[in-house]
Length: 507
Image (cartoon, rainbow, N blue to C red):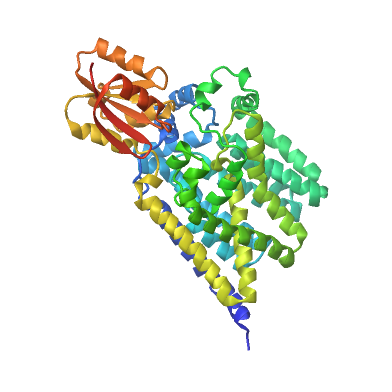
C-alpha cells in the first residue's frame, strides 16, 4: 500500500500536464487582467515615446536622445504598437515574456530537482505579485528575465551534453540579453562562477562562447555598455546627474527589501509612494506586523529550501542555486555602491526563479515529513500572494504613478486652464502627452524639475490667463509643492498616486 507521500508523488507525475496547464492559465489570466487599468508611469512614458516613433530611423534618433538602454525592447514595443496604439499593446510583450519565463522556470527546476518541486515553483511564480507587476510593465525587465532563463537553460544542456550547438545557443541568447539590458552581465558572472567552482572542464568553451557573444553584441550595444561603465565614475559623463537625480537612493538595505518584494511584491506593507516619501523606522513601524510575518515565512522557507536541496541532490546543487539566487542581488548592490546607479529590485529579477525553487523545495521537504504542514505552508504562500494581488488590482495607493487620472481630472474641469507639468523625471512629459488630445497638447507645457516658481511666473507674464493647473509628479518630499504654495494662491487641489494637481491663481 502506498504511503501518503508516495501517493502525492504519483499524483504529481500522473497529472503533471494538468497541474502545469493550471499554473499557466492562472499566470496568463493574472497578467492580462486589467493590463491597461493603471496609468503609464514615467519610465513607461519614455518607452512609449521611443517605441511610437513613426519609422525605425526616428526610433533610433529618439533612443539616442532619451535612453541609455539597448534597443531590443524598444523594437519589440514598436512592432506591437504598429498593430494597435494602446497601453494594452504596449504592455503585451511583457505579458508574453512573463508567461514564457514561467515555462522556462518549470523546465529548468524540473531538470535540476523533481516534478513536485517544479510544479510548486511555477505555482509560486504564477501567483507572484512581483512577477505580475513586471509582466504588466512596458519595460525591458520581463524580457531580461526570459533571456537570463533561456541562457541558463542552454548552459545546463551545454555542460551536460558537451554539444557545440548548445554553446552556440548560449552565446546567441546572451547576445540577445545584452540587446535587452546590459545588466545581463550579472547572469554571465553567475554562470562563470558556476563553471569555475564545479564545471572546470567547460571553462574554455564558456570563454569561447563569451567571445562569440561579444562579437555578436558589442557592435550594437557598445554605446550602452560604455555608458554603464562610465556610470561607475559619474563625473566622466556629462548629464548623468540629470538622468539619475530623480531616483531615490537605496543602500545595502535595499537587498533585504528585494527579498521582501520577492515574496510580497510592492503591494503589502508600505507602498512605493510611502517608501519614496519616508523610509524611516517610524514610518515603517505601522507596517511591521505585515513585514515581519512575510519575512518570517519566506526567510524560514529559504533556509529550509537550502537545506532540503543539499539532501535532495548535494551541496553542489544547493550551492549552484544559492549563487544563481543571490548573485544578481549582491551584484546589483555592489554596482550601486561603486556607481551612480540606484539599487532597484528590478535589477535583481534574474535571481527570482531560484527564489521560487528554494521555496518549493522547502514545501516539498516539509510535506514529505508532515503532509498537512506542507499543505499549510503552500496555502499560506497562496494567501500572501492573493492578498498582495488584491491590493495591487484594487487599492490605487499600491499602483503606479497615476498621471492618467490627473489628466482626466484636468480635462473634466473644463475651464480652459492651461496644464503645466513639473517633475525631474523626463518621462512624465511623455505620459502626459500620451493622454492628451492634439488640441489639448496646445494647452500643455513641460516645466521640468528646476526653478519651478520662476518658470510659472514667466508663464503668467507671457500669457493672459488668470489661473493654471500644476501637475506635480513624483515630488516625494513636497519641496516643489511647498514652493508653489508659498508663491501662489492655491484654489483647488487633487491627489492621485504619486501625483498632485493644483489649480493656482495669478497674483
